Image 1 (tube, one colour):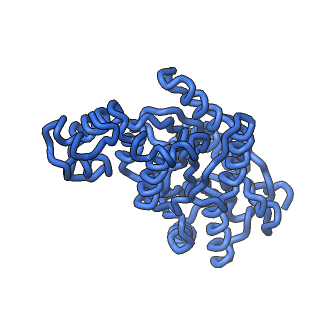
Image 2: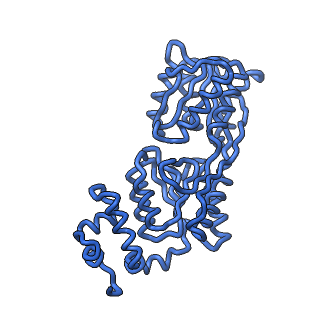
Image 3: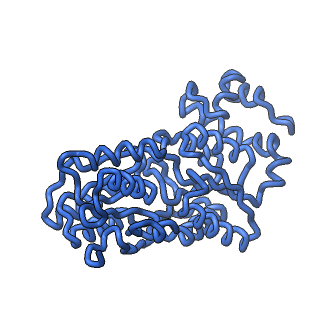
Length: 338
């Protein structure tokens, strides 16, 4: 075959149309998965990607892509620092993009990183993402993929998470220990796997401590302020409002604190609140916010190590790193200090 591999060459070999080849390489939804796999496998075999993107690949071979929901989230700022430290130690550099919680943007970024030929990709999934074909396409290109913090079990690849079940269980047990009996959970979007895992930890703690689970005390919200405030008000303006709440994140917990103050509820005397992430602002709030400290920096380091190992040995056993977290108790639950 000619040293310049074309779409027509691939189409003729596979006995399909040029447009089908083009769409398959672009992950078009009209092309079935079997055809996509055939096209990509043959394109890799004949070096189509190297010929097409060779000049870019030469420049970006030592680049690792990173996609996070929002860079301003404290957890991801710390994780990026950890990723960068490991990457630099191995002569690599990183390219950071944010999905802004958008599935379409995330899918587009994955495609762009594939086209760049990055040495690996680290991803924390967007809040809107419920379909994962773009990650399977990435894997079919042979690009190492590691999920960190937010992930999905549907894609078989390396992952780094905290023990979300245990963290939520411990936080709920803490709320019970300070006297809360009607404990709510305000989670993130229902499609976010770690939100559902935290809800299971919350339910398990209620069961173990002999408290009933009440579905009316569970709510979900998107990550925008309007959704957070709407769901916070629904919980706190109910006639029989909860006396304790575990929130999916500190941003959601802060919305709950605002709604509680709007209604005239005292924190923690009338209602105790626990968040996730231990944002720097938590200490400055009035009252200060009890929150679960997540090892973002360590998470980033471990994710970067995994992607480098996968690059070195593509056939190694899939790894899932589970990191510990701990509860930072402050005034929003510490009734004994009020």
